Image (cartoon, rainbow, N blue to C red; front, side, top):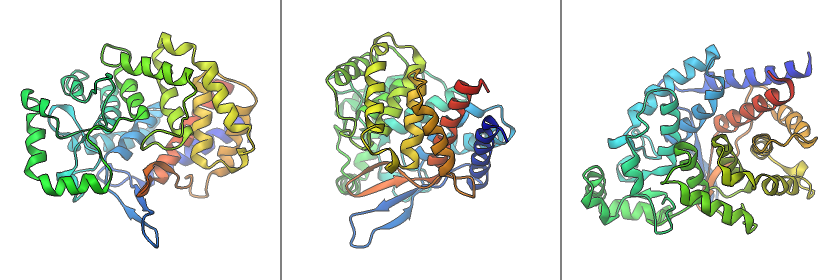
Length: 345
């Protein structure tokens, strides 16, 4: 088999794994690894975020017959999870904690971007609501559930009432999972930017990003997305928008990634790190020898069933959130980008 055939076969095996592990309702499985117990354990978690991110990545393969079926089933699931005014929560409706969790701008951005590209969501439907997520710096807060500004907005008033209707159980839940009303995370803001593109609402994100990168921000320091390769991945996805202010950041970001690869830790990188570094370098228009090594390493990581191992996508001190399906889709997405760069296929 040729080299390009080897990568294509690996991608197809990954796609078939996803097809086989998608639930009948269109959802993909994900887990929480509970670490704050004497004996840590995995807990199945029904959420909307995992499915949204997977199918967003799969848009790269939308002409593939197997992927078409995956996307059609996922559309049904994601539309069913939709709340008023084009907003989504992290948890899905069949999760027992759904009624006490707040609207989540990260999940909303990812699912909205996907459904908008599928022609099944109105781009402008949730823009008014998005304005209520902003803090004084113009960045977007992760959650919205108890801002009194919501009283004066007809679209979001119902979310405020929903919160106070279950005030005590909701408050306990938020405290247990460290979900602060003023949480701000740059990777989540980069997902908002990925959805909305450059506009008046997202200009503060662009300005803050330029400031952080030029000041050598530690990409391991962000809330929820705790590892630099994940933060860099979500940032680099925004180079699809041709944002002028970001062009000067390319050499800086390339050096950050190459520095992470050359400090003796390359052999210790997990499946998700290798895939995300490869994807980020290609989106930064880097074509050095490191991308070949990363691509071959991804293929070597693939398991017999076509998947890649569970790796944390985001987390906190109480647990890690992971999914083989998420690791798998990001691996095949990065291999597809590599194929297009190296073999124009």
